[in-house]
Image (cartoon, rainbow, N blue to C red; front, side, top):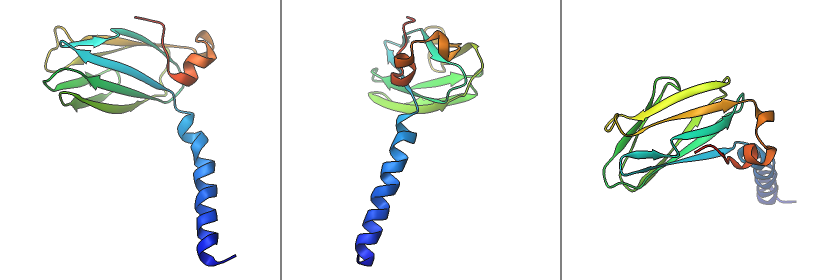
Amino acid sequence: MTRKSQRLYLLQVLLYLSTPVFAAIPEFRLTIKNNLFYPTEMQVPANVKFRLVIDNQDNEPEEFDSFDLNREKVIFGKRSATIYVGPLKPGEYHYFGEYNPNTARGKLIVVAPEAMPKEDVQKGESHVN
């Protein structure tokens, strides 16, 4: 085996081994439309790190802001942003839009993972609206 083929093989092995790590992080989605967050309430699993993908369908930017989550992120109009959150303890975590704080509001409801169907935790699906 040549040195080049050894490196290629090693790279393939590393990519193969790292794939489950990336796939293991559930993803939940929020949408900003007409200066509102959809859904306004979302159930997520406790004690699990997850991705929160926010899609801003408005033309104007909005800043996702949460004192409870210690996160803030400007999402430009017609763009998406990803925020990594958790692991969180069970409870409610509020968020709002910095530029439209009276209308763009919502909360994450964090529940024990066993209270959510397993496929929902893996896919990042939520049944709370």
